[in-house]
Structure formats: C-alpha cells, structure tokens
Amino acid sequence: MTACTRFAPMLGARPGELSEPEAQALAEHLAGCDACQARLADEEALAGMLGDALLAEANRRDFATFSDEVLRRIPEYRARPAAAPARAARAGGLLDWVRHHRLFTAVGTLAPALAALAVVVYVGRSPSPAPGDEAALQVSAEGRGTTVLDTTEGPVVLLGDDEPAGT
Image (cartoon, rainbow, N blue to C red; front, side):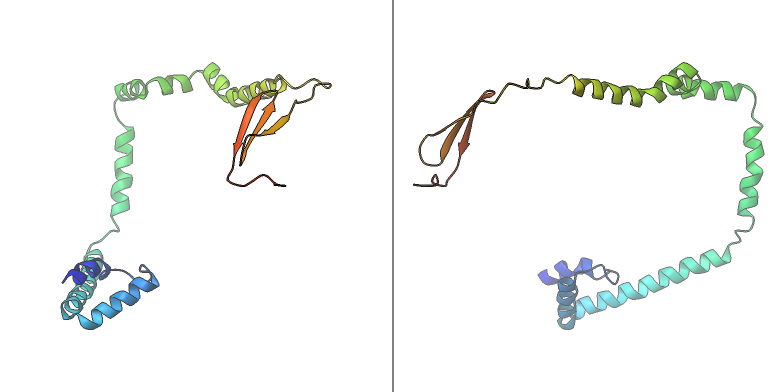
C-alpha cells in the first residue's frame, strides 16, 4: 500500500509529463497492483466524461449574441455624467498629475541620458597611477603553502595546500 501512495499522483499524468524512469516504475507498479489499475481506469473514464460534458455544454449555448451584448454596453459606459471623469482624474493620483505636466515628462525622458553622462564623468575622474609610478611588489614565503604579497595597496596573503615549487 505504501507503493500505491507513491504512484497515486503519477496516475493522472499526461503523456510526456513523467521522466523515463518514472514512467517505467509506474508501468511496473501497475502490472502488479489491481487497485491502481482500477483507479487509473476510473480516472481515464472520468477525464473523457468531463471533456465530453464541457464540450456538450459549450455546443448547447449560443455565443453569437455575446459580442453584441458587450458592444451594446460600451456606449452606456461612455455616456456617464460629466462628474465621473473628474473623479476618475482625481483617482489617478500623483502619476496622472505628473503625466499631464510637460516639464516632468521632459525630465523623465532625459533622466537615463543624464545618468549615463554622470557615469562617464565619474569613470573619467577615477584616479589612475602617474606614468612614472610602479607598483611595489614583494613576495615572501611564510611556511608551507602560504605566500604574502606586499603591494602598494597593502599585504595580500595567499593560502594554499600545495608546497612551493622547487622544494
């Protein structure tokens, strides 16, 4: 019975949903389990009946008038009193107010270009070493697998498990 609880969710899988090992394990289980075979037969019959029932209900209904009903409602929506648009404009809030003012629209349009310009200026001002400056580098071994690099920016410690080459 514990195997049945493992395979029960797989019984309703559509073709291609299960991996090859899952499909093979399910087939092997179904070959030896009458209860799961009966459950699979019930699910297949139910799936067919449900599809047929939905199709029959859809064929029974007349949807020809649906679009006409929707289109008939549109003029009623547009013919609301004049107070409704004012309320709708107030309901929009700050974003609608900003959209209606050209200055904010212009600033919003230029913002990405200004940000790109700021990046270019910032990168252009980054400190770079003078042409005559050289980085001071001093290497010392501090035992097995540990190396210390003394740079102008400060010491860098490299830890490793390997023995230094040449020993």
